[in-house]
Length: 346
Image (cartoon, rainbow, N blue to C red; front, top):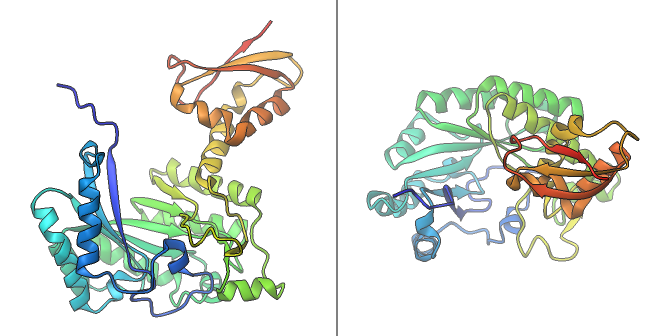
């Protein structure tokens, strides 16, 4: 019988905001981003989170299920706390309810002993908060580590056979389009298995907010952030590194009025970037400007939203580039992925 499950991969997050962090980065308010208090994840909280996920009607539709410790610096927690949290997940792994664990941490907060501990409890992926490969950007942002620490971290993680993810943040103070492009190139040389890209935003209560209010920091505009993240995403994925998230996750507390002071925040930022990338690919299929008055477009059904764009912005752009009125956009799976077919409408 064919497998009718549509969903593929489930990640159940356990948030530990600021836990284990030895520094306060100038842009960071993880309690607002995750909508969780600054407190260690208790065994009861972990169990409740996993049990709730298992009881979901959609749980069985996922082929791979993973537990993720996000926020904070997991590998800088006391070893007894690391062990306690990992042990709380262990029964779910033994029962086959979940397949593996991933954690996020800092490049300068890992060692052989802690990596061996995580390996013994089923951790398979470590995501590093790299942010930038430019030392000046890292210093200004008060990250507390340098690019060299990221290089060393990769060596250690690969030695212990972990998959490695990178989290990158364009638009920090001291960053630029060229500097971020260089960061992308240096990251590719390290060979990560996946990446996330979060453009910097200004959140109330951070040191970055004070710098911004003093007029000493100009965040990326939304359009500039879309362009920079799109180029980074294209380069990473052209080199076989999937970008698994683009844009900061939202939470009710972060979205309260006045919490986000400035920067390229958008609730659909990832979609804006993906649509921008898609339109770069399909531009060559459009007729030359002024050649046709009215056109119709066919595209694979799954790509129709990308063609249309956010609130039909893609339609406006295509009409602007071609000088033609788009009469219809129809799904047609005989069209190759990443392509469109243009028809003259008479």
